[in-house]
Length: 255
Ligand SMILES: [Fe+2]
Image (cartoon, rainbow, N blue to C red; front, top):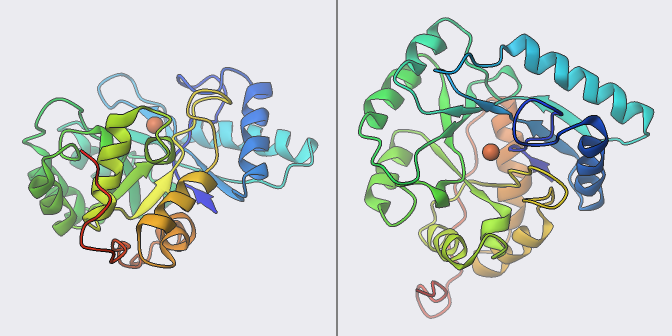
């Protein structure tokens, strides 16, 4: 499996505080069957954001530590980019950090407010050759019941990421219900851990993948955890989002 959203780089944000914790997170990921992790620290355009060089250096240091510890986890540099009206300009200047330097990047949208600028902004970003992945969509305004709006963003070419711990219920019943609902609508492209530590949103995708496989058509887990992340890192068109399993209609969304 490939996990494209994590805060594993030590000391850069509210994720791993030090190298020891970062390695512990990597061990958990490997034990769960994750072979590649994208390191995606928070990136706030308005708050003196990390440079791509800083992120790359932190990824390089963690790679060295992984090799020393004999841990065969691949790392890819990225960031979780906060929504900001300046993003198209930053994209044109080539300073917006993308996943592995390709066209896709994680975009973090607000939870409680309607990001009215988003459709125009996505239009501009697409013109600049970039493709947003809506981070933890089940915990954003568009993802929590404003689904027509979310479908509009998908129609503009956005991908939708849901957090594994939301789908397994570890973040509470509301995120779980929303994650299930998004799956039932066939709107989810990939699962990721959004791991912050070994305890809080820990690494690992297998439990959530099993839930998705149960709720969706056969092969959903592979699409959500391997095929789509691979396509993203290769800069290719991803496979279609898995559709819900056909059992007595839209069966599983429990309000
Ligand atoms: Fe995150």
